[in-house]
Length: 330
Ligand code: AHR
Image 1: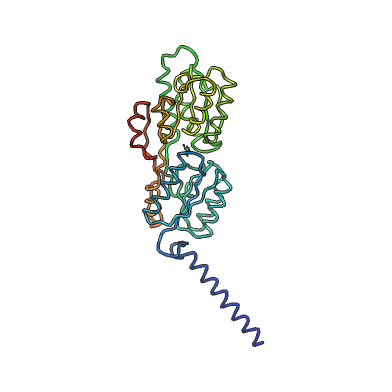
Image 2: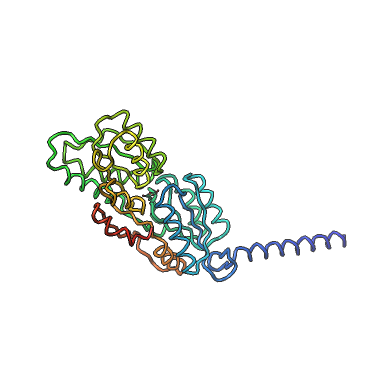
């Protein structure tokens, strides 16, 4: 009898030590947890992947800004897979991070995991891309670009350039990742902008997944199937850069035989524009890190933040790219 009670006491003491250990590992329990174990805010960030120059610049911006703001960053690269992002968010919830931020690879299918974060009392910030959840209380704010506007600006430039065209202008479109907010929205904005001019026709439209290699491969198919392509609208610079190789290999001169319009304005894209190989770029800024860290601090402190924060952006012609290139940060 005495032996059994002693054993039970030892087990209870051991469990208490384990529990204390796990609480310590989870940090400040009063604030919903700080897995760093000190007073630093802990941010769990799930990144889409490393599909483009834009994404690389965005990851650097987030890492640098977190370190400058004294925020402990748990960074996860989802390799463009939604299931990896859901897994990462669940890990962050388990680790009781203070705030979760993520850039959703696609728009749909987030309600369940966002509800899990809400139930755990962990605020979520959407950055770069949004979700289509009807329940807007599942996240605190969305910081990022207006992708519809980017597509519209690209389309409006083309409408202006082709206003005196007397015959059909054949356009091919390289879409971003299927189901992603920038692919859906840029397509919509561009289509609406060109809708008023019956000469402007999208003759082929396919996803190049925001990647250079895919842009090249899809452009090769476009060129085989459509001998008279006048314009390429690529949803990002990287796909446009891949397409350049296909266009050159087909014996055509990019920027002259085929007008090329892209989105992002990363350095390689701006160089192609300055060199006359691209014709127009609508900017999408990846430098979201500093604003994101401000928001993280505010939501952690329980402050109200605007539901939507839009990134400031511009557009570039070839001349403007030449002037801007020397000071381009990414
Ligand atoms: O969500 C932003 C988009 O994602 C960028 O335009 C593209 O380059 C990236 O991969």
